[in-house]
Amino acid sequence: MIYKIKLKKWELSDARDLAEALSNKKVQNNLRDGLPYPYTERDGEEYISAVLSANENETFAFAIVANEKVIGSIGVFRQQNIHRQTAELGYYIAEEYWGKGITTEAVKQICKYVFQRSDILRIYAEPFAHNLASCRVLEKAGFQCEGTLRSNAVKNGQVMDMRMYSFLKTEL
Image (cartoon, rainbow, N blue to C red; front, side, top):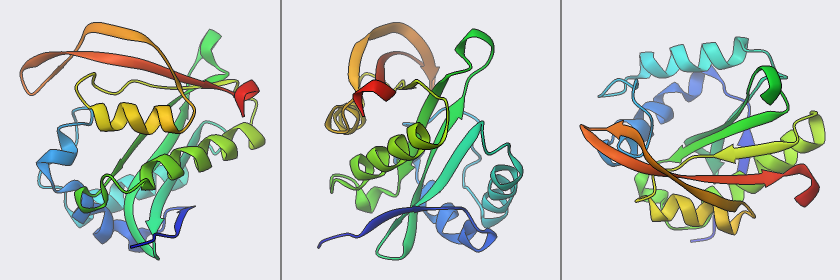
């Protein structure tokens, strides 16, 4: 199947699709802690409300849409102080859409959007080192691996390495 991929501003009506994508342990195992499980439609409404009220020059957050259905989330978040022109990228999509090039396309789209509409110079991402699919998404989107962050996280009771990837505005 060929997917038409686009990013769109969140709407409260997207909460059901968001809950459907996030109520999956395989998805949540690759994300940071703090998300409720199961993830409910109400949780989705709270997240969407927070994103919609965030400063649009600091939080660039969108729904990932494939063939008119919300299947995931992607965001770029400005850092502070001396890192104020650096932003962190985060993303996920529903498991049934993994391995189809959708996330790579979404990453390309959001990087172009942020670089063209802000003073951000560098976007970085820190996937778990064992999450080879996410590392590959970043590489296919033009990110450079800067190295391994050894014993950088504890997830599900396990100490894990992470990888540091970056994409610079000058590389667009």
